[in-house]
Each structure stands twice: as structure tokens, then as C-alpha cells.
Length: 110
Image (cartoon, rainbow, N blue to C red; front, side, top):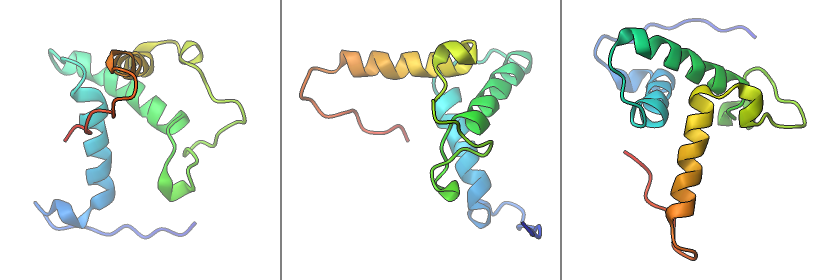
């Protein structure tokens, strides 16, 4: 794959939609759910998020595949060794259980 880098203007986030989408995902799926007391605590959390992002998460630009490829059997929270992935899954499960049956899901976070 031949990719040529392109510089974007300073303070012009609309010129780099891919990076903006990634940082929005980090903010929405990690930082909105975890209280981070400092940088020393943030670094391992972001590392775990990146592992999940590259190993399990599907990407529309890759025809709903993950960047590292996916096997036929998806990983479980036990395989991931806990961490951010297990916490995110537990949060999703709790929000599903808290809804009365037949109700619509809550609106997405902004």
C-alpha cells in the first residue's frame, strides 16, 4: 500500500477527520467512563485501549475487520485479561440490564 503523508493546517481539526475520529473514540469510550488522577495512571489505560482498538474493534474502513485481522472465534473478556476491555463490557452490560424490557436504548454520548 503506497501512502503519502499530508500535512494539515495548525488548529484545523476538520482537515484530519481520521485522527479526530480516533480521539473522539478515546474520549467517548475510555475517558468518559474512567476517572484519571494523573498521567501515570492514564498511560496504561490508553495502552489497554489501544490493544483493544487494534485487536478486537472492527473498523468500517477495513470492511468491518480489525487492523490486526480477526480469527473466526472472537476474543472474550477472559482472554483479554481484564483491564479496560472488561470494564467497558461490564459497563455496557449494566446499562442493558438497567433498562426495562421493551424500552429503547439511551441516546449516544456526545
